[in-house]
Image (cartoon, rainbow, N blue to C red; front, side, top):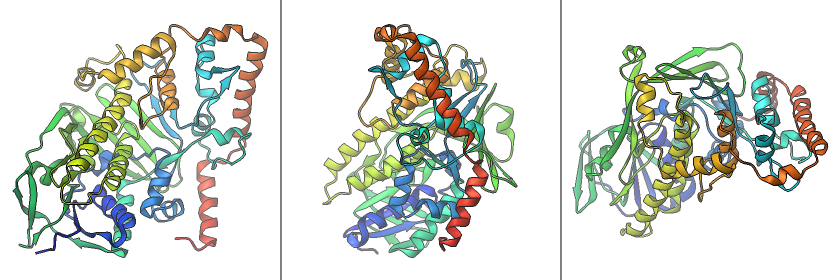
Length: 479
């Protein structure tokens, strides 16, 4: 039997389990004993984290020990300027949901009001969007006068590659790894008293972290309900590729759902999401999953992380953002005593906010009257938008104003690009625009577009940039 004093047990051998173990080992050092019960069943939903991260992943991955050179040399990861949406219902055309720093303020007026007045698309003004569409990439320079300095990037990755990289990290750290499953969960007084493993070993701890995916083996033992929103079907395919593709995912909508294609260094991964009644659900490689959320993610001395706590479509980088927030929240609130009441309350408050904000952004993609009458799209339309999304849409449609909530995972630029891509134009704009001399405004707008086009024309193709960077890293003996 293990000593529960300052012991944290992580249950789950998939991505979330190894991520939590790596983050705790790096952050806590020897302040707690870490045990990872690496059940081989826990990673079956890992493809639902998707293949794309937001720009915040750069610092987060570094914090757990996976810096950018390691990602590029030891996994098949690539760079990403965002996601291109094609054939999306309600959108007037395809658009690039790119990552970008704050938009300029011209003549003292936020940029989007000029677009409304001129009825222009935002995309030509975004260097990251134009580079992604061209298939080019380069790291943003520090010179703020260079238009490329406004671009932000995330990563395109294989979740299995990331998991294997985390496994290697945990093998080198002070993490006790037990490769078995849990036979029984003993509870007492709303807490987990101990776990009985399949080999008969009994494990006690101060804190249990449930990373068992949709099984939710630990948190379920404490009678915490999971509220199901929709049931969907996922199909995942991998094809080898001779050359790295563009620094963007491409999501194509169909009558029965959508399909995301992600270029990696030596392959292309395709994830298709449909309704379980569709033809793709009959394929052998598919499996069903549920979107929704736990009524609370921290109960007693157990915290659910990742797919054990929530289910969300990998339409955007939301799944990776949420699991990152889960881990950061956990590290912020590691309990200092056996009484977890205060920590649990704060964790659950932040958890609910993060999930509500992520869901609002994704549900905005379905805020149109043009959805097909097939089961997937009608089930999506039946999900209530929620108060936060309703407020955001109402204010933007009326006056072009962005409603902001504290610590949202998607920023104002994300929302501006999404609204513009979906063809949402405000009814009114800031009337200060009318006071700007037309010729001066025209010079400003034309100058921005020309500067973007010029810098993009000089950027190397994604695969060329990657090859040169890896050659440099090899000379530096990295990886």
